[in-house]
Length: 139
Image (tube, rainbow, N blue to C red; front, side, top):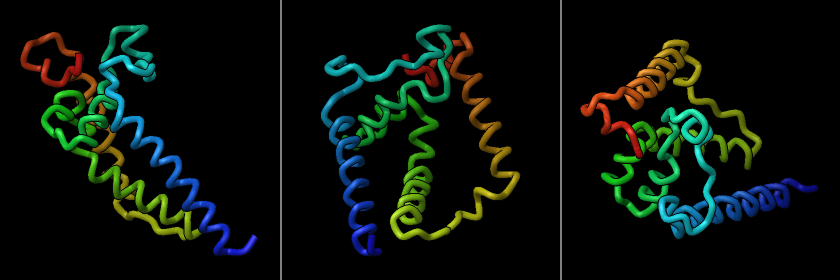
């Protein structure tokens, strides 16, 4: 298979998948129950709000540019969304053009530790029973 055909197939596949993702999350609100979105296993089985709980609803509202509503469902996702988009962009670029571009930030041990501590603290804060911390709970 020649190089141009390979790139065309990769781009076509990615556009189809990302278009379907955008269409589903833009058109259907996960809160409405119109179509069955996956439920969080930790919340369904244990009643514990994980760091990802509310992400589907937050993505829906981000696609509608309703930042404050998205923030109410998952503040961590909204704050990291620009970084996530950059990571996705670099990954897609590497995939399409067979490159090995790396974000140096990801290879610093301190970055990984800070990210891990942030997610763990966020997880703990979301599950504290105090009224002040209910802002972190999407339910």
